[in-house]
Image (cartoon, rainbow, N blue to C red; front, side, top):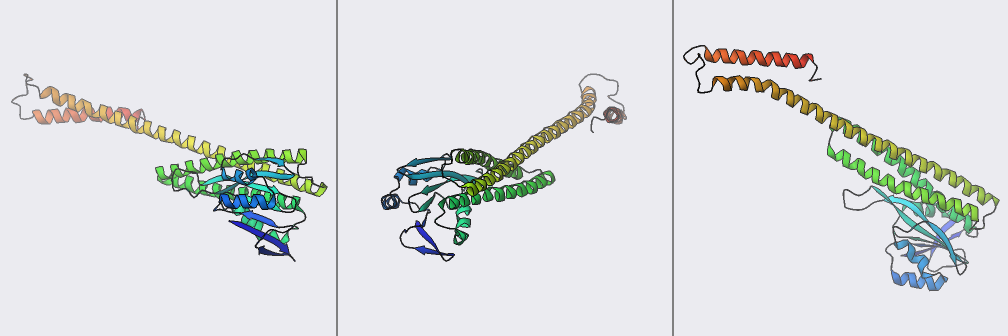
Length: 313
């Protein structure tokens, strides 16, 4: 699906065809025929439009026939039905600067472009560089918001895990960990992209725009630091919980071993008196009580010994 937007008197108006200063937004479902038509209409290399179809497309920028392409990663909610997949993934956004238009291509619907659309009436179509920087800004804001949601969800799951000790919370924490891996990788590649854009001045930014890009680099670095911190905290939590589980298992096994030892002596005594050999108590009316008393006494003594040694603690 292809959308054409133009800004007239600070109002966003959707049109039927591209004009000078039009923002062209390509959304799923994506059809190859639409790509071909748009490529011929705006004189865009077809590869620039189809690159967004690869979810693993790397962040980069390049230029061909005076048409510039920038690929950046943005976070989005994972709609996969597999319960073991990450809650959030990162997808590429292709930003294409033609002679008269700015084109954005999205393989999935994502909040960054929705936010950009909501603020498009404040943009100046003739300042395409600033529009690109604003897209960058919405992407960084999305990372920050999702990281805060991840941290809140992690805190809730950790509390539930300490209270319930269920595997369900562990699996959800693993899904969060996978999401953070996506975020750290994407934020690091975005940071390299921003720094390279600043160094090469690929967009031809003026001084104000360069300063704005520098602020975005700082914000992206902050998001990357947050993602690294949350990743380390989550890894430490999972490692600590694994140690707790192993320690609890050792305590249970130790107690079971002590109980086995305590019960083995009465069984041994009963076995000795139950053998078909003369013991001197065959005809005694007190034989059963003697064996029971002896077994009980030995069990008490052994149990007291282990309690004294704090085996059960």
